[in-house]
Amino acid sequence: MFRTFLVLAAAASLLGSTVAVAGAQPEPTACTYELTAPRVVNVSGTDMVTATVTTRACDAAVTFRTTACIQMQGSSGPGLCAQGRGILPAQVFFQPYRP
Image (cartoon, rainbow, N blue to C red):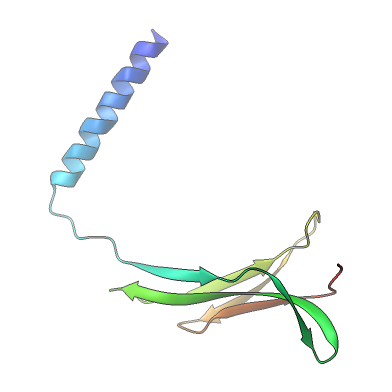
């Protein structure tokens, strides 16, 4: 019984997606982003970890805000986030750096 339900559900989802594709809907607009891997940088003599989110290409869309967050591995506490407005990248700096 359960197996039959799964087959019917799968068939219904395939039929549903076919109907949706047949409609004249515009392509969704989207942007692509680049996330840099966290790395250690020295800022005014202090080692910090930084990561950046940058807007790359937008297809008929405009980026309003990007957000980059870092959390210390194994930490249960909140991480640290930074925002970039518009096309400006979001770059977060986390300290203290612990190797």
